[in-house]
Figure 1: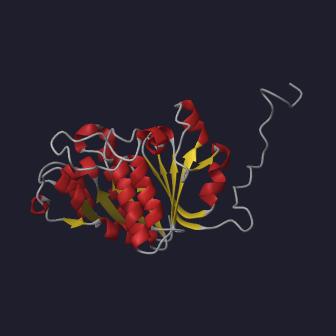
Figure 2: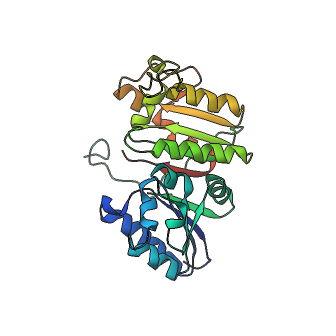
Figure 3: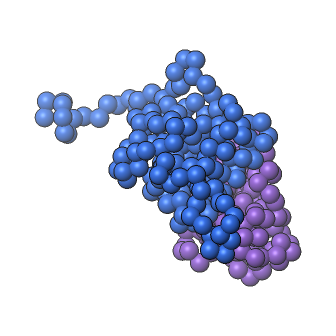
Length: 111
Length: 154
């Protein structure tokens, strides 16, 4: 890859669902380390990956410079307080996601 | 083999990508939603994203595929069965939710039902707002959108 692209990776599966969720997040880490702009949205069961100690892949994303978003609605549906997520993650609403989806040059991949 | 039928040589040149027909409307976002609608909150997430894009003035098309074609069936009625904890409170059925979405953003949103997926599931009585489309027009529909997101499993 030459020109920097921007990616929005949406993970919807929890870390216990199998190895694919972690691999998908690590794809984001690889893209960020390669110099791409990467945002990752954790939604539905994947919000549990943002709890402290739940998923090392989230820590790797943040260390690589990716933006980590957590869907506040999904947290609330699971009775998880927004202030419980790791400091590297930001709780967002769907309006922020929509703005990113509609932005020019953003590629969205949903898992 | 004679170059026809099974075992025929594959052309060296790839087929041209689908293009929207001249005069075809262009959409900001195509959401292809598949999978079982009640197996997770997948469809809720897809609809929340669609609503958020619509609130920002964008246009959205939803292509209901696989088991998602089940949610716009007329026999589901206007309301869900009573919630035993709140029996007096009405809860809209999925066809009603789709109707409200379409009515709330006239001209900004369209709902497509895949004919093949509907037929395979016997889900052939959709509310009239649903536009039925053959999977043969899948590529054309994608080409008519600035961006496409595929959500769900098979």
